[in-house]
Structures are given as C-alpha cells and as structure tokens.
Amino acid sequence: MSKKNTKYIFVTGGVTSSLGKGIVSASLGLLLKSRGFNVTIQKLDPYINIDPGTLNPYEHGECYVTEDGAETDLDLGHYERYLDAPTSQNNNVTTGKIYQTVIEKERKGDFLGKTVQVIPHITNEIKRRIKMLSKQNYDIIITEIGGTVGDIESLPYIETVRQLKWELGEKNTMVIHLTLLPYLASSGELKTKPSQHSVRQLMESGIMADVLVCRTEHTIPKDQRAKLAQFCNVPLDNVIECKDLETIYEVPIYLQKQNFDDVVLKELDLKSDKEADLKDWKVFLKKFKNPKRTVEIALVGKYISLQDSYISIAEAFKHAGASQETEVKVRWVYSGDITAENINETLNGVDGILVAPGFGDRGIEGKVLTAQYARENKVPMLGICLGMQIMTVEFARNVLGHTKANSMEFDTSTPDPVISIMEEQKNIVDKGGTMRLGAWKCALKNGSKLSEIYGTKNISERHRHRYEFNSEYLQEFEKHGFLATGTNPETGLVEALEMPDHPFYVGVQYHPEYKSTVATPHPLFKAFIKACEKK
Ligand code: GLN
Image (cartoon, rainbow, N blue to C red; front, top):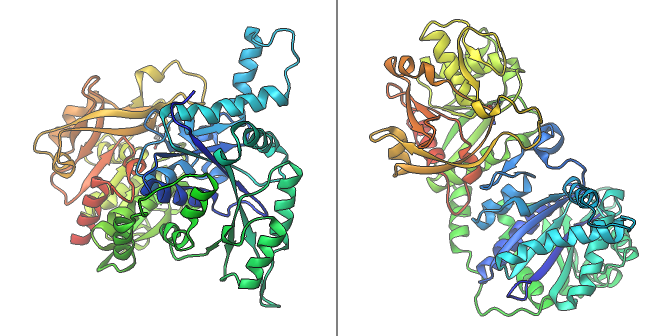
C-alpha cells in the first residue's frame, strides 16, 4: 500500500478517436503539478501487441522510448514534454501485457483449480498495474484509457474503472470524459447528441462521468453548455470547453481559464493554496508565437505522409526553436523520392537537414544522397540513429572510396560493413523489445563540438537500435576528418560522430528528441538550429 492517499483520475474518450485525450491528460497533469502535486500519467492501450515497438509508425505513430527502455505509445512523449518528468515501463500498459502476465501466472499454477476469467482475473491485473504507480508516492495518478467508449476491446478497462470507483471511494477517484461536439455548417450549430450518447454508453457500464471535456471547433453557447450539463449529469462548471487552438501548447492555459484544475481538485476533495504558476510556460508560448527569425529544415524520412511518425523530433524543434525565438519550418521530404537528378531541387534553399531514424531499406539510397549533399554543400546536418548510420555509409563510400560500403541491415555481404550488428544482438531472434533500449551513458571528447554543446563531458541519452558503428573503421574515419567524439565509457561503442571541417555535421546513434521538453529544450537541437540560422 502507498503511504499517501493517492487519488486516481481516469480519462475516457467518446464519439471518435483522436480527440486529444493525451494532450488533455498532459495539460491536466501540468496544471496539477503547478498546484504543488506530485503527478504522473499512465496510458492503458487496449490492443493485443505487448508494446508498440513492433507496430508500423503508419498505424500507430512514433514509438516513444523511456529512460528505463520501454517502447511505448507516443502519448508518453506528450506526458514527458508537458510534465518535464520521466515516465517508465509502468506508465504504458497494453492488453497484450495484461494477458501475458495472467497466462504466465496460470501456467505457474497460481490459480490452481479456478477458471481464469476476464472478471476478476484480467480486471485484477489491470488494477494491479494502475495501483503499481502509487508505490512511487504520487499524489495523483492520471490514467488515460486508449480507444473509445463502446469499443469491444476497451470493455475490461472500463469495468476496472467501475470497480475502482467503488473500492477506492468517491472522492479518491474521478472520471473525465472527452467528447466531440460536431459543428453542422448548414444549420450553424454545435450538436450535443453524440456526447449525450457516449455519456449514456459509459453509464451502461456503470460509470458516471464527473467532468465533461468537449472538443469543439467553436465556442460552446451558454444554452448548449446547460443542455450538456443537464443531459450528462454534471454540474455546469464541470463542462469544460476544449476548442481547436493554434498549438497544443495552448491547451493548458485554455483549460486553466475555465478553472479546470479547481474543478478537478474539488471532485477529489483536494486543497491547494498554490495558484497554478504557468509563467515559464507562457514565456515559451509567447516566444513560440512571435519568432524573430525563421529557419527551414528538411526532415528526410520514409514515413512522411504521417507526421506523427516523427512527432518527438517535430516537438523538439519547437522547444529549441522557441527558446531562441526562431521558428523552425519543417520541409517533410520522402527519402524514397530522392534521386541524384532531383536532389538539388528537392533540398534547394533549406537551412538545415535532419535525416530521421528508421528501419528497413526503403528510401535508404535517397538518404545517402542527402548526407552527401549536406556534407559537400556545407549544409548543417543532424543525423539521428539510422541518420547517423547513413552519414557513416556515405562517408565510407564517397570519401574513403569503399564504394560498396553499407550497413549490414541492408546488405549482409557488403565488403565494408561500416555499420554492423551489435555483438549482443547476433543471436537474438525475437523482434519484440530486444533492441538496445533506454538510457546509456556516453562520454564526450574534450574539446569536441558536442562537449561544448552539452556543456559537460558525461551525458546520458536514450537508444533504440540493433546496429552500431564498426570500430574497425574508426582510425580510417578519423584520419579523414570524421571524428568519433562520443563513446560508451564501458564498451567503447561509438555513439556520436562529428566533422570539425564543416559548420555542423553531427550524427548521433542515440535519440536526443526523446529528452526534449518545453521546460528543458535539448542542447543538441538548440545548437543545430543555431547552425541553421548562421547558414
Ligand atoms: N535500423 C537501425 C538499427 O537498428 C536504426 C534504428 C533507428 O533509427 N532507431 O540500428
């Protein structure tokens, strides 16, 4: 049991998916944190995959990686970016994980003699996963339930919320239901009926929503608000409007103006003398919305049609850009379309280039051409993970003359495997959760650009990869001006490369984007944007 009386907030969604439960949860977390509470946010995902690590980003957006090496839903990225605090393995639970645990227990004989059922065995396991976080002494745990009320696969989660409301007591739990108010242009009206229906659906599962958050394109008229309160059984003050805004970072301020945090504290019988202090957040927003200059950066990747695939990179640009009053315009470039003939035109006029992380060989040669373009034309370039591996391949082919150099991920019989499979990966056959994951230490070389950027020699960054720089080529690389300036202090693995004879040509095996938050923009992104400004 936790020492504190932890309070639990559940966030459910109705009407449609993609209403922004993650942003609402993150915004509420920020407001409550600024009122002095120790808050964490958890996501329950109803799909059967153990984690999104094996999901195509086209289906599920980016896979976010935590400090402790969990491959998680991209909403955890929002939680960290808003709360400026790390999440962990326990912050993302899927149906796959729940069933895996229950089935393993069944095989061990933990339920001997009993029929194992959704209720109570699956719901108990969901409860255990929710309560597990309270051991870390949080005042408030916000649990976002993925999917939409009424989905078959969400049922056990909704049932668990119902049970927890009874077990933990009225004032210790609450449910925030996020719905959509569609706007009918022909009659010029916001419609409340879908919200009424989804609240009713929730009630059929035995749950009353305590607060209604309404996504809407337009301000909700007073009478519609009253109607929502009346039909959905909530006090008028508990109908909160969540209008479409220019940026997701305005949401906390918008919700605060409607006393969202006060409403929630009242429901949970919590008191705080501390006003929500969002001063720094507002400074960020002001700079973000009133930039003094603009740079355009090409983001070259293979998942370009869905920008959620690179969401942490896009957000890291915003944090770092705003901190120095620079707007970062992103030119999304699909690497599969890049050829030697069109590259000048495709990248014409950009101030910088970021080659994205990725897996598989689609669009690889376009990325190699991009790295060559950036190196030869002295365009600032940051390569992340696969991006860094591509810079290595390009350098080996075009500077060192190893024309067939490649990563072993794409060509196992290359005569020059400048990127090779990591030793500990060689015998791994399972795909799920088996990469080099999570935070690893990295030592930066004295006098390097990277040590200057970070302002320290010892850093820690998050990883997600199977391949690595092949150290057999290190001497040759360094002799020709591409230096390994970041290495793992224990194993000597090359984690970062830079080219002194270039305004900014940096490749990192790790993912700096995962650690960028509004409060703490990432130094590497800041330095990269600065270099782009100079160009
Ligand atoms: N596919 C590469 C590897 O596994 C790079 C991974 C990445 O970019 N995250 O090493």
